[in-house]
Picture 1 (tube, rainbow over the protein chains, first blue to last red):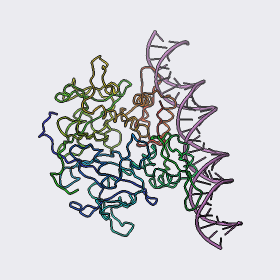
Picture 2: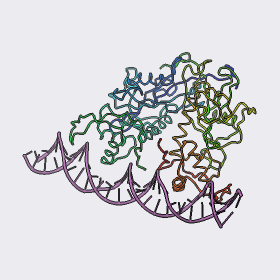
Picture 3: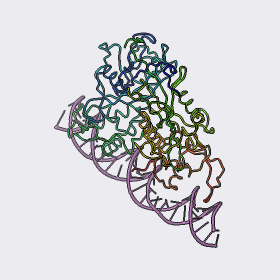
Picture 4: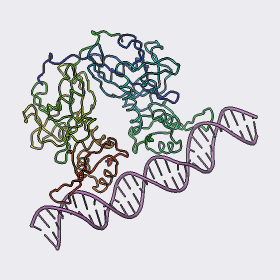
Length: 252
Length: 252
DNA sequence: GTGTTTATCGTCAGGGAGACGACTATGATC
DNA sequence: GATCATAGTCGTCTCCCTGACGATAAACAC
C-alpha cells in the first residue's frame, strides 16, 4: 500500500477504437492494416498511445479524427452537428496481449453515420469498412474474395464487446440515431436497427413505437423523394437519450 | 503511429474497487482511510497497483480479497459459493487525477452480501462500510456525528458511476442475488431492491414477478423461522443471468 | 384469543407490443 | 394513362405484463 515509485511496473496506455457504422444494410467496423511488427499486414482496430497531458476521452477523439475525420459529438451541444458518438467501452490489460511490452488499452466505442470512404493518413488501401461478421470470423474471405486473417492482438474480443454494447444500447437509448445523418426517415432508422440486430422488424409497429416515444424523434417538416414508394417524413434526433419503455429486440 | 518506446509516456496503472453491500436497509460501500499523502486521513476507495504479471481482473480480485477476505465468484461455477460478483466498471485517466504522477485507474465494481466487519490489513479503524449517500455528499457528518470530508482523488465520481451501474444492472440481470447470502427469501431480495433503488416495492407484485421469472430463483425446499410473521420459503439464485422481461424500477 | 407482522394467492383494469388489414403516394412498366 | 411494385402511415385486435389492492396463511407477543 505504501507509495514507492519503484514498486510498480511501467505501463504503456493506448486507446483502441471500435468505430461502427451501417453500410449497405450491414453493420460495419473500421479496420486498419498494420504496417509493422507484430501482426504486420494483419487487420486491426485503429488506435494509438495516450499522450502525456491528454485525457483518455481526448486521446480517443483525436484518434477518431485522425482515422476518419469525424468530430466527436459534444454531449452539451444539440444534435445538429454531424459528429459521431464516442464512449468508453472497456479496458484490456492482459499481460501477454502485446508481445513487445505491457500495454493496457482503453477501448472506446464510436458510432457514426455512413461515411464516404475511410482514410488512413491519406492511404486508403490501409483502412476499410468491413462487416463485423467478416471481421469476427476466425478466418474466411472478404466480399472481394481476399483471404482474411483474424484481427491482430485481442482486437476480435474488443470488437465483439463493442458490437454487443451497441446492440444492447440501442435498446434503451436513442443511440441508433448516431448511425443516421442529421435528417432521416423512420425507414432509415428501422434499417439501422435491422442491420445492428440482424433481424427484420415490422415497419408498422416500428413506426408506431418510435413516433410514439416522446423526445425520440422530432419532425423537421420536410419529406424525402426517393426512388419508388411514398415520400417519407424527415426527422431529427430529439433530446431524449433514454428510451422508456425501451425498444424490444426480437428474441432469436 | 510508428512504434518507438520513447514516444509514449510511462503510466502507473491501478485498480480501484467500488465494493457495495446492503446493510441495515441501505446501500453501503467500502471505504478505507488513507494513511499517507496526498489526501492523508481522507476516505478513499480501496485499490492498488497492478503487478507485473497480473491481469486486471486478477489484480482487482486480489485487492478485494486483501480488503474483505472475499473470494470472487467464479462465473463458471454454480452459485453455491459465498463469493462476490466482480466486474470491470470504467477507467479513469485524467492527467491531474493524482498529483504525484500519471495514474490510470481501472475501476471495478464488486457486489457482496452483508459481511461481518471490514478489515484493512488487520486494522479495523481504517476501513468501514458507509452508506453511499453519506460518501457522496460533498461534506457532511456520518451516522456517529463525525465530520466527513469528500472522498479522495476522483473517487466520488467513481463511486457514483459504480452505484449507477449497480442500480441499472439489477433491472435486467439477476445480480441482486449477489447481495444476498446463498439462501434467501423473497422478502430479503425485495429489501435489496428497495435499498439499492431507494424505493418501496409492493410485496405482492414483487413476489409474483420474481417467482414468475424462469431461472431467477429456485426453491430449496426449506423455510425460515423469523421473529414475527409467517415463515418464508428459501430460494437460491437460479442459472439465469439476464431477466427478460426486466424488473421495472419505479420512476421518480 | 387478539393483535401484529410477514408471506403468499387472487382479482381487476390499463398499457404496450405483436400480428396484420387497409390506405396513401410515389416511380416503373406496358 | 392504367397498372403494378414499392415504401410509408394509420387502425384494429388480442395477449401479456404491470400496478393497485383485497384476502388468506402462519408465525410471534400479550
